[in-house]
Amino acid sequence: MKKRGIGYASTFYGTGYGNGFPDISRAIAELGKDGNVYIYVGATEVGQGAKTILSQIAAEALGIDFSKITFICEDTSITPDAGTAAASRQTYNTGNAIKLAAEELKREIMNVASEELNVNTTNIQEYLKKIADIKGDKVIRKDGIFTASTTEMDVETGQGNPYYPYTFSVYGVEVEVDTSTGIVEVLRAACGQDVGRAINPKLIEGQIDGGFSMGLGYAIMEDLNVENGKIKHDRFTSYLIPTALDMPDIDKIIVEDPESTGPYGAKGIGEPVLIAVAPAILNAIYNAVGVRMTEVPVTPEKLLKALREKERGA
Amino acid sequence: MKKISLKINGKEYNVEIEKDMRLLDLLRDQLHLTGTKEGCGEGECGACTVIMDGVTVNSCMVLAFQADGSEIITIEGLDKGDKLHPIQKAFLDEGAVQCGFCIPGMVLSAKALLDKKPSPSRKEIREGISGNLCRCTGYNKIVDAIDKASQYLKEEGEEK
Image (cartoon, rainbow over all chains, first blue to last red; front, side, top):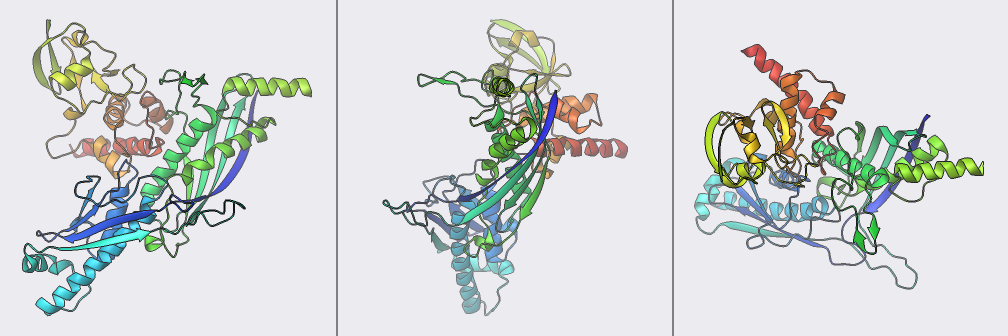
């Protein structure tokens, strides 16, 4: 028999390293000889869209076109340390560092425009090449350093303010459980994600889809099958991850509530979009068949066993 | 060693290969068509997908000599100089690419699907790429992109 159920889960998640661990991002903004602005950061682009979002932040801070920004990242011989692409921290932490560096650069460009060209304007784009020519080999280069707020928790009481800021999210999913096979299919899903400010909504949607598929795999498929410290499911034939057929379309609700300390109000969402997925699916399974699964992944074998135990008990 | 001849992206090749060489290695190592990616190497992930005589194959599971006399399309064969193929353009427009490793295979699976079925439903699109694993995107924007590519290809057909 096929039974349907609906489940919800919500989380709040502190981004950044947290717990008092030093969390520092550095960036350099430079007016190149060609009149383009170069941003140097050690931030790593792994497909999440950091290059795009961080370039957008730089363009916004300078008040110039996105196409005038050249973004240089990852090469540690020429870029300053912007910390890891982890802890959902690049948009907020490195975004802040880039904003600071870009604002400093803009101030200096405005000073030079005022002194050398007798132009007083905040609209610097059309003067970039002229100012670059005036400066010649002495390119204008400005640093931005952002240190996140974090305190170590009290070892005695476990109290403290380990993270800043927090990101909030909620997922709702509908599942169909086949009680004869134990197979769970996720039929549809909705995600409400607090983002502070959506610097690039399309990239946020992509992160939500990606986070959902990882959460879906975590909830019902991905089983490392560790025996005596050895991973038995060490290939895709046994370690199953979602395919396009396993993924539902997701209604995405991007909640904008600007964070006062974020770059233009933005916060990180990389991990938050994943976390509530598995509990929402497990709640939906409970709603569908009345068994409370407490171990992931809820594979067909485990769910069938639980269903039989429930029948025997009833 | 064995001599084979095959057509890749419209160009004739006569190559000498080792008998146990995979098609994937012929493409990447011998012909330097490195757009085709190796993922799992055992036919599960689809990263090495190419089109062989009109159907998609995992090039890690095909021996090079089996491609003798066949016609292969790799990701390098899709664009026309500076002009992207409509499927590639749709992938960019929809933000369907994250880390990008699965994308050459995804695009070729999309092409094989759209060549046969110009107006697929979302379900058919999902089936069409179900042999290509992606860890980043959750597939939905890729499905959107293939849907959009179907429109682009129709518009292109009308212009001609």
